[in-house]
Amino acid sequence: MRHFLLAILTALVLALPRPALAAWGDGLFPDAAGHWAAEPINFLGALDIVHGYPDGTCRPDQPLTAVEAVSLLLRSTGYSSAGNLPARPGGQMPIPTARPSVSANRGTAPAVPAGVAWAADDLALAVEQKILLPDELQEGLLMGPAPRYLVWQLLARSLKTPLQQNALLDFSDASLVPEEARPAAATLTALQVIRGFPDGTLRPLDTITRAEMLALLARMVEDGWLNPAPERRLEGWVQEVKQDTGRAGNLSGPAGSRGTSPGTATARYLVTISTPTSGSKDYPMAASAAVFNVSLPTPFALNNLHILAVLNRRNELAFVKAYEPRLAGQLTVTTGTVEKVVQGRGLQLVLRDLDHDLKTYEATWATTVPSGLSALKQGQWVKVELNGAAVWNVEPLKVKKASGTIEAVEGRKLYLDKFDKELGNVFLDWERARLSDKDGTEYTGSGGLQAGAKVEITCLDWDKVLEIKIL
Image (tube, rainbow, N blue to C red; front, side, top):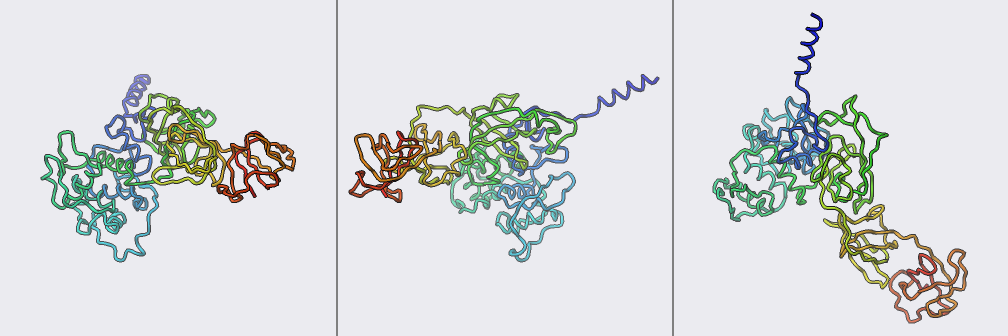
């Protein structure tokens, strides 16, 4: 009888539902794996814009309410106040999020319907930022499934740019777009934020799903209209992937979880990523990382690939999208001093070459600098390898200096009156060097290099002279 009861209990235990185990690279949410919107969902999940439900899912095909649309948009713009709200049953799990003060300067807060009082801060902030209109603070509107046209209005208002008032919408169902939403639809269409369906429709009156909203937000981030947590988004290439077995163990939780699960152990991977701005750094791969466009099952497949990545709040790689490998063409080399690094939507290196010409070169994801372009200083000597017109590699140079009075100039040799203990007093191929005034600008004097001139010589060695300053 005892064995019979034990067999029954064992069968019951085996029949209990178990959490699905996500394959490596499947990401934060088990129900997003394989979904058409898996990439934007995990991208925004890594940025803490979309949060999981208590069961670890994100429910991508669930209709989105208007108040949820407002909260998601505020998180994407960096204005979120949802982190200060208590969790609500079945709702999204809030996390602390920085937000601007909205109480001291706002004046009287707008009246929020009782049914959405849990989102009062978000709604008040949305009204203040003119993302939500005061007459849209209606419980039925906010708690009901959001139609596409309403979401378009919210997105367009967040851009803070004039809307296209009289533009035509070239879609077969354009007449269904409510008149008040037409400028928003036209503006977002012109910006390629909304692109319509394959059958040439917009379906403005249909309810939008969570996945569709996240795809729109991810597109706005990708195109530069939204810029959430830029310090946690990386673009560069993978220099190395190594297994850090010394840190393995207790590092992976259940599928979709954000914490750890005691008793579980997994290999720990460190990924060395080179970015043009910050140089080469090691990042641990999160156990629930989402990886796209690369053959799995291991992170070693990322070696030498161009990637876009997102770090989670623990500084782990939580999202990785891979592209083409880093392959050099015919490289050319130039040497000079850093004039400046220009950082806008792209990066540029301005170099003063050995002829005193200023050359501007574009930096790309493939540009490699040991500590990053941001660490370069004006006047620093560097050797630059160019892949076409783009910077491929920047090598900071360790230069040496000697000074004295020119004793003689004989052909390719320049003699100083002082003997330097490391360089001596003879310098070869001086005519290849940059001739400068004492302030580093191009020398325009009439004296030139002749006996009796006081100079400072910058070089790599006695036979590799870079610059001669006439003092």
